[in-house]
Length: 112
Image 1 (cartoon, rainbow, N blue to C red):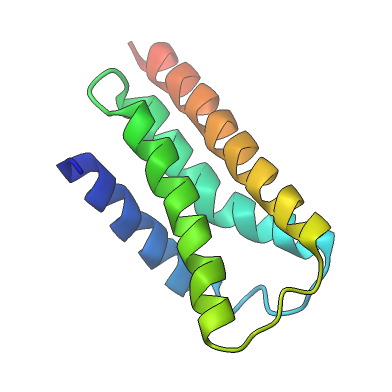
Image 2 (cartoon, rainbow, N blue to C red):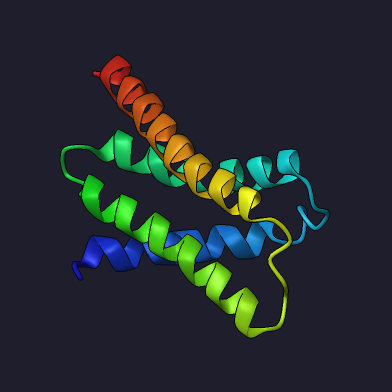
C-alpha cells in the first residue's frame, strides 16, 4: 500500500474517534449522517488536492475502513441487526466519498 492509503486510514480513524460519540443511536438516518461526517471530509480533501492525491487509494481506504469496522464490531460481540443496513452503509460510503470529491474539485477550481 502507498503512503496515501495509510494517511487516509489515519484521517478516517481520527474522524471516527471525533464523531463516534455523537452518533450512538441506531437507524438509517443516523447511519447516513455518521457516514457523511466521516467520509465526506475525506472525499473533499482528495477532490481539493486532485490530481496530486490518489483517488483509488481513497476508495480502497474508505471501503477497507468500513469492512474493518464491521469486523471489529463482530469480534467484539456486537451483532449486525440488519444486512439491509450494511448494504445501505456501503453504498452511502461510496456516495459521500464521491460527493466530497466533486465539491472539493469545484472549490479548487473556483479558487484559481
